[in-house]
Length: 410
Image (cartoon, rainbow, N blue to C red):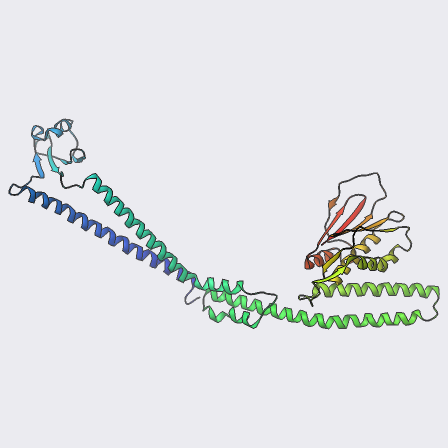
């Protein structure tokens, strides 16, 4: 499927690394064998030169135990099996061989005194071999790192390109950086093309969202403005009591519709218009929400207590905060029992608490528990949760059998 796939490159990289290490180890073993042979021959020749003109007899054969060197006679009398034996302390190597006499064996004794290296020399050779092995291992590791970096370089390049991209602020340079043609026709190229298409879809979505927000902001608010103007004209005429009640219902429905439209536009807006860092007072927005929703308590004997413990200022989107407070106040007004109250709105330095009673049994005491914010008036308190998340605020809802407490903190 792919001309030069990533899997193929990785496999080739491993093969090259193994091949180079195998050749290096093979050459090292071959050199060690040749060096050992030369060393043994040099020791034998040196010993012969030192004994000249008499030649040393390193290899000797014995067909009788009594003729063996005295140090081997006791061992030979144990009738050892055929094979090779080594006596390090005596520096002798013995081969037990069969003879024509089945009652006894022959012995070939090889005296390696002066040929084998001394213990101190062995330590030096051990250190040399250890160093050589360490050098080869380091070479193999370095070679593996270099080869693997070359093999996975396209993946690292793609990761770096993607890491520098901000999906919320896509630019022409971002599209150029992630262009699939830079990564070839392999798995990385397929991934790059997929990411490129995804970014194109995100850009198109953001553009559509901006167009919808700008268009809907005008198209949806215009009818509300027309209805509001018509209501103001009707209020100036002489109306009967029945007409006034109907007019109030239309006004409240228009206000609800306006609030809902603003809520949707606020949530649908992917990029804000710079109001997120605006500082505003909490109390005016709370008073406005109470005035807008007070009609819900017209036929109920419920008081609204405002406990203003502080006059805080909040940083964020004032419209979003107003929508959240309106939703909380409306929920409290709608779910408060008739003649049971009061509804308490407590304003602190860093939080707003809205408390309403939901049970007439004041004797029961239950530990309050946090409940889901997905249920509530209309679109639900989930909208309040989303508005808070967008502005860096926090929202929680605590409820027991007696009361519900909505907490909005900043």
